[in-house]
Amino acid sequence: MGTGRDGGEDESAAVFYDRRRLVPVGHGDFWLSDTPGRPGSNTWGGSHPRMVTWVRFHDRAAGGRPFCVLNTHLDNGSAYARARAAALIAERVPGLAGSAPLVVTGDFNAVAHESPVHATLLGAGLVDTWDTARSRGPAYGTWHGWGPPTPGGDRIDWILATPDVTVQRAWVDLSADGGQWPSDHFPVCAALRLPAAPE
Image (cartoon, rainbow, N blue to C red; front, side):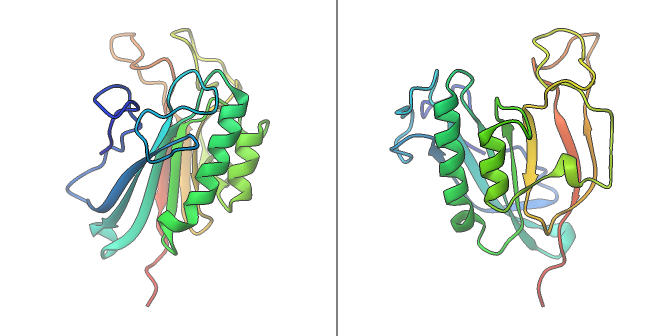
């Protein structure tokens, strides 16, 4: 689900989901700019328009438990644009999720624990699932630029969540098809468990 960053079919922050398990009950997009409702808007000096796609789901496997997912891709060229984007996402999180569990995913183009972007989103009440996982795989830099994995490198792709989400495991997926990486980033993955629905 989600549209392109210029409002068409170009690069997007789409959310992919398993239709056998999840039922979308609401969704939308907003742009990381001073005019978040205008497709393709870019007012903070970023290299490209940047956006968020959000979806509210009911989880069939958890008795219809609702939760919300936001996916984004922050600007690679402007630290100012990234900082403003993080502030806007943090501002919108409560209204989108309400009391439901929330997961935020994306290419943040900022190093976890070493950037204002990470600090802003943790300050909004989210946790980094890499940190809270009961177990995790080896750490690798998540941007590789089509080169070999870098053990212990910078993690600029994150999965954040509200603290009520249990993180069973987190890992970086180094899978390749015939020796070819599917992207210039390695995916960060997490196995999550939603809290029980309130009575």
